Image (cartoon, rainbow, N blue to C red; front, top):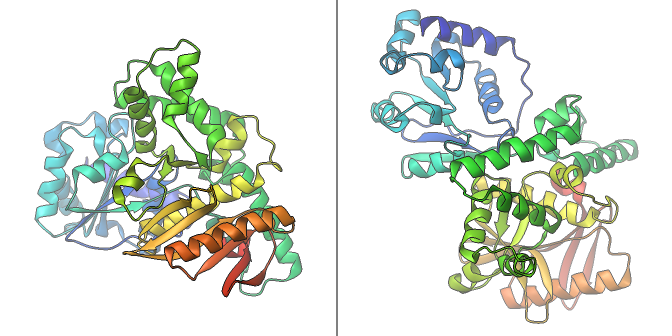
Length: 424
């Protein structure tokens, strides 16, 4: 263990770590649980924290419990890790980073023992078929604060490309729009953005080896083919309603016998793995909202473009909407907004996003490629105005590709903004 602790720090020093726009609370009275989908960069976000905080070797302890070297160690040696650190550096660590904690048997007892001393800043991550990161946060309920790490945001990509957004010339704007098109196509997984990896192979493996294994193995699913089938329904349904009843009826028409209960279980298992997110319909009745048909969004845009046959230009509006959802999810996880819904009335007028703050609706957001088409403009604005009246909300926003102006209609002001400006 002494050798491992020393070697790991040397390894971290040698790594080239790109800075993420992720804020970690530094608290001793809570365990910080770093959650998110596989390959989104949870471990590297910890490395980034170590580097940005300029932590010296004696300041921190880092263990990856899935390292083969660590797996081979006896439990008795692992639980003495603080003592080994003290022996090596003459002091206890201030920061304790426990990566892939689920690989350590009876990990909760170990973590609680450290936590109860209130002497360390404790960070844990976990993501495997044995225990999902969200489940780790759930098991630590009341003792932990979760930090969500999704694939790179567009703002992070702009920062990585070292584009100055303080003064944006027409040339810089064109460059940003080009990067946005690439982002809407390739997504933000660090491996895809930062390396020359074959994207088709990456997303094929992501589906087959990560999502499928996480869900099937973790939840001991008896019918793996049904999980694959649900995924094939989910992928083309992004930014649309996702009805289990509809899938049930389709499968029934194909003589595939399965209960709705099983379909619900499998679809929510996919959400637990953070492969997808379900967005509930807004209602002043919590029960009605919970029983509504949700819209579905995927954890990365590349999953859409490299896993199914899509026509990029035709689906650009929906890809923009999925990107907006992911950004709102980041804001929600940071506490900048409290909750997100979509809105639809009995006449099927729809607003893409309802941002709620406490008991009040804070903002209404529509997303579309352009308002230049008369019918599109009429549909989007009419829905916004109706929702504005019903939900008593004055902050109305339409995100488009590159239009920017203010619409004044029926005593309401509607701000129209380019997506790229909103994202950065």
